[in-house]
Image (spheres, protein in one colour):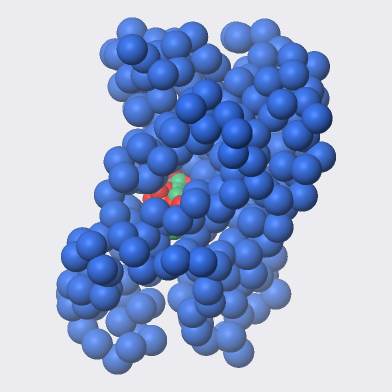
Length: 260
Ligand code: NAD
């Protein structure tokens, strides 16, 4: 049985990595999926893959940190699907590993802008439709770094801790309307996100870049890094009615590395 039959879902930052895995998984489970990304090219490729599963899709280029672009995305969704969104996954995110003293105002604003403000703007844009229909599932991508901090990661940790605060507050606001708001906290997933992070982490630890992945995976109790599909499985559970009594939670997908 398909768990998201005929639902309409939007996944931000779904051109690659975790977001793409979530978008494809949702489509396999019967949802029509809008693929957002700042890169129209990758969004289109992911949307094409979704259409091959037999579900409808729409690629929308928008920077989630810019209010006007999120507004344009909402219009594009309404034009194709009507004023309906069952599932919103705020997945778009960026990171940089660097010493706190090198964290410029520009870097701070960019990371907080995409990871936190982007989540706020998309929630603000689409919750009125969910409230109207007394139905909705919002899934915000936080991180293990939203539960416990790492050095050289101040802006990212601040953004991901804040995403959990936003998730909890919004869960309370929207509970009367039967809208579930939860967060997912992955630990280490070697997506394209890590191509640059790996070099930055090597500088931080003074180790060769090619040793970073093995070193990090070696610290995970379950013995391997998470895959995008591991994260997509938990997102699917939170998007489905099997988790209808859960709201305001931040679920770890870290192979046992984070237990708070
Ligand atoms: P990724 O870099 O592989 O993919 C992120 C996607 O988001 C890219 O396609 C990118 O173009 C898009 N994006 C970036 N800025 C955007 C913006 N302003 N508007 C719209 N789209 C934008 O990253 P990923 O590893 O798949 O990470 C996805 C999410 O998971 C992020 O929120 C990240 O912080 C979080 N996360 C990742 C890991 C990990 O180890 N990979 C761990 C914990 C949490």
